[in-house]
Length: 204
Image (tube, rainbow, N blue to C red; front, top):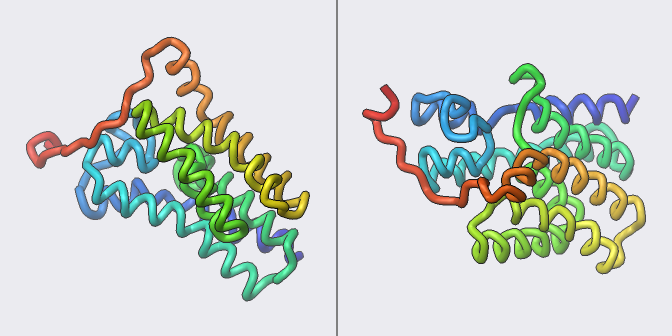
């Protein structure tokens, strides 16, 4: 029962579409109608700028952490229910019940759950992401490489095998969700990162 409840909490919290809700409430637009049509931080950054993207990032990162705190305090302090909660939070973000089972790519929410379980691994993954994006200007490439490196970091830092395997599963989900980006990277058609400033006139 605790595992089922943990899964439900994780999935519900993960399904909250922060990008859609925040941008709609503050900017008055449906972010799905712009850019890549994705609700994630990158598309928000490209469309309406860094401030809104930062808010969306905090929301997507935080919802996984909030779900884990709720489960650890009110459901079970055991590791496995918390891992199930974390996994379903990422699945909820990627396949939201509020968006007809569509969603983001799981990067920010995945980083949030890594921050909860393994802060040093999350810092390592974020550092890799920043380095790749700074050099190449490709957010998707940074996300893919950081996801690949995260389980290696967990293993190198001596974490329990269950956490290493869990991190590898998270990484696999993130990488698979970037399949279309990988195709565009291969063909040289992937967009590089640049900040957007959608004006009021553009929204009409």
